[in-house]
Structure formats: C-alpha cells, structure tokens
Image 1 (cartoon, rainbow, N blue to C red):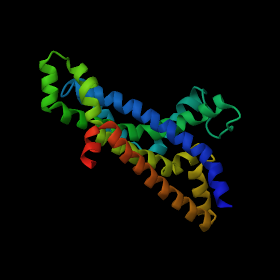
Image 2 (spheres, rainbow, N blue to C red):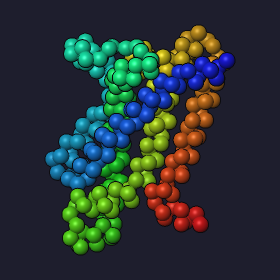
Image 3 (cartoon, rainbow, N blue to C red):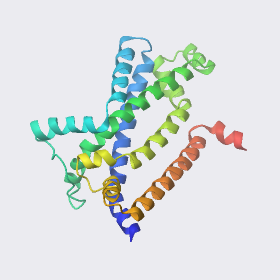
Image 4 (cartoon, rainbow, N blue to C red):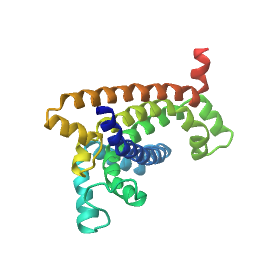
Length: 230
C-alpha cells in the first residue's frame, strides 16, 4: 500500500524539514533584527549583501560544498546515507548537513522579509512614543516591534515549511537520504504513477494544513486580527 510507503519515508522527511526550518528561523530572525537595528550602517549593508548571495546559491551546490568540507576534508560527518532512528545521535548528525543546505536559501529570504517588516513597524507612532519614554532602539525592537512585525514573517515561514516538505527532492538525492523526496524521484524514474499521484496529493494536503495553521497563528500573535473577525 502506498500509504505505508509514504509514512515510512515521512519519518525522515518531517524531521529534516523541522530541523531545516529551525535553522532558518534562528538565522533569519537574528540577521533581520541585527540589520534592522543598524539600518543603513555597515552591518546592515553587509548582511543584506550576504543574504542576496544566499538567495542566489542553489541548494544542491551548497550541499556539495558542505560534503567536500565536512565529509571529505574534515571527515566530521558522513557523506550520505541514514543510519535510522535506533541511533538518535548518528541520525541527527546525518540530517545536519542536509538541513543546513536547505536552510541557507530559506534563511536568506526570511532575513530580508524580517528586516523589511521590522523597519516598517519602526516607523509607527507607538514606537516613537516608546523611544520618547526612554527605551533604547534594541529595547523597542524586542519589546514592541518584533511581535507587531511577525504577521508577514509568519506567512513566509508557513510557505517555506511547505516548500521544505515538497522541495527536498534534490538534497535528499545528493545525500542519499531515504525520504519522501527520494521516493518521488525513484517513482518518476520507474514510471510508478500511483505512488507519484498519491505523494503529490499528500504534499498538496500538507500545504493546505500548513496555511491553516498559519492563519490560526495570526490571531495568537496579533489580537487585532481576532478582534476584527469578531
């Protein structure tokens, strides 16, 4: 049955997507906050330049660079394969490089979105009032600006997580990971249309579910959304 085959592969793909999304959020929020707090300064210009380079880097090419550095030269990680969840530490190490290769492009995109959203909120009247009361720019960013700027950031996060679930085909093949992406690739090569159809339908359902969760998070993050619905 196709369902059992998909569930078996999801035990790798979902942890990989979650790990990549975690790296993406940590890197992007850190870079976005730092760049917004130093708007038009050297740090802001430099980080946004690096983010533009990150957007232009293909995932598979960055994955090959990681293999050359950490697997071939330093020999810290294996070049591919997955040992299974019976050895959690080894399984985590096997997913670390693929997650980083997936996160590099997504974090670059999200960092630019975060910076733009933060700068837009920084121009609001309530932020100027907070600054007039004596708050530093950093305190205003963390205490007032960040939560009010999270709506567009959460929207992009939801789209990126759905893309990580559906777009890991190339990276999973680079690292020889037996995930959902590799299953789709093998099914296309073998002309197994039933497996391809069910995988595509499943991924479409996951995109709908992720978008629904994002809509629910709107009301949690910004009470004004919930009040407007009432």
